[in-house]
Image (cartoon, rainbow, N blue to C red):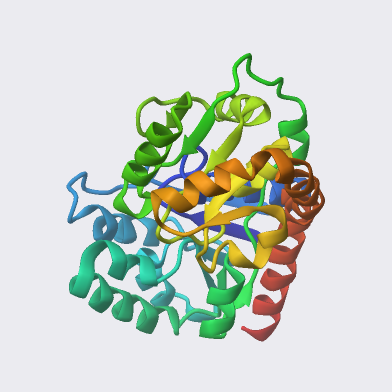
Length: 302
C-alpha cells in the first residue's frame, strides 16, 4: 500500500503538520509506503489568496501513483474529485472555524468544502462531537509518548500559552488573565518562537498550560500537556468538555480563568493523573493503526 499525505505543512509547529509527521512515522513503521505532499516539495504560488488553489493543482500531479490520497485540510477537498473512492479527508479543527474567522464568506466557503468532501471515500475528524454531528469517522489526534518521556523539564515554572497568533486562539484573554494574576508566563507561538522540544520541557515544569481558544478540534498541545504531567486550564467548548475530569474548565472571561487557576492547588494531582491515563489512547502507534484499518476499508470498497 502507498499513501500520499497531503497538507500545507508536515512537521513544524502547526497541529496538523505535527499530526502528518507522526502519521508518516507510524505508517512507515508498519511497512506502508508514504509520499509527503506539502509546501516544501510541491509547486504553488506564494500569494495569500492563491496558495491553496495553486497548491491543489500542484498536488494533483504528485498523487497519481498512490493507492490512497489522504488530505489533511478541507481547503484541499477539490483533490477528492480526481480519485473520489481512493481519497480520505481529515478535518483537524472543525468547519465552524471558517465562520468564526471569516464571517459570512467563511461560512459560504465551508459549504463549498463540505460539498466537495462528499465525493471522498471517507471523511474523518479528530474531534468526536464534530464527527458525530456530520456522520464522519472519528479518529483522534495523536502524540508521541516515548519522545515526550525523553525530554527533561525546564528550569523555570510559568503559566504557558502555546499557539499561533490567530483570533481563534484568543491570546488577548490569556494576557488579561496573567496580568490579573501577576504571574510569570511564556507565550510560545506569539511572543516567542520555540522548538517542539523546548515547549515540552516547559510543559514538564509549568504551573499550568492555559488554553483560551474560542474554538478547537482536538489540539496537539492538550495531548502533549497530558503526556508531560502538566495541568490544563481550558474553556468550556465542545473540544474539552468530554475530558472535564482531566482538565480545569473555565468560561470565556478573565474572572472565570482566575478562579480556575486558584483551583490548581487542590485539583493538580487529580487532573494530571487522569490526563496521563487518557493520553495512552492517543499515542501515534495506536492512532496509526486506526488509519490503516480505514485505508484497508476504502481500498476494499473502491
